[in-house]
Image (cartoon, rainbow, N blue to C red; front, side):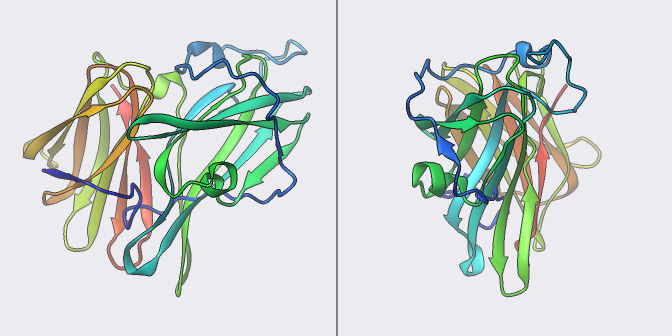
Amino acid sequence: MLKRLNHPLLGSMLLSLLCGSSTALLATESADLGRRPLQSESRSARTPEGIAPLAVGAVSHLLLPTSANANGQFGSVYKTKVSIFNAVNASYDVRVGLSDRTGEIAHTFVSLGPGQTITFNNILADLFGYNGGGAIDLDSRNSGNLFIVNSQVYVDSSGGRYTTAVQFADDLGAITPSRPGFVVGISVNSLRRTNVGCASNTSLTQTISFQGFDANNFAVGSPLTFTLAGFGWDQFGANFFLTNGGIRITTTGNAVCYAVEVDNTTNDGTFQLATPF
């Protein structure tokens, strides 16, 4: 069985994104056209000069499936550091949306100049004044306005800083009814715990199920089925014993899912984006 976590990355993962640039401009004057799903246009884009970018991961729209600004185990505080690099010779705004279990709850705009990098040390606090966990959607709304993102959740402790890199997803990273997702090499025991979560990539409500399986592909525990709100986010803790097994994730809609395996002593976490297959 899986149990819900009140704070998505509480003791389960360490992820952060640095707000290094206090001079980041919020484009509050931008007209909001609303949240939209990830689409293939981002991957077939060309720069304003007509050049197809060679950099892997340069997209115009992506979804960071998890982030945190929350207290965790052993007195830890998880924060999320995000850096955004404008990969083209043009100025544009990026729409940044924040989702929790109820759906998208806030959005703002960030302005990027040609070749500019903007870094947030604690993006949830810096852009939204938000405490808790959730998903972050970044969208330039123009297939030619490409950007590159680096994201991580981190926690500072007496033993130093522990960080967990968070992989983003474009439309190819989304789980659909015909393409379930898999996370593998997962353990849940006295030494390690694992959280599993999903960020919706549709405005419609969907039903998602998690099923653990062992190294020989035998089902472990009972599946968890839950409802995910349109453009919402949710995360649960695995509540079964597992050593180097995996979790199969299915949905009736469209979602980006992940797992985070965390060391119970150090809080050091490993993020894995669920692979659709």
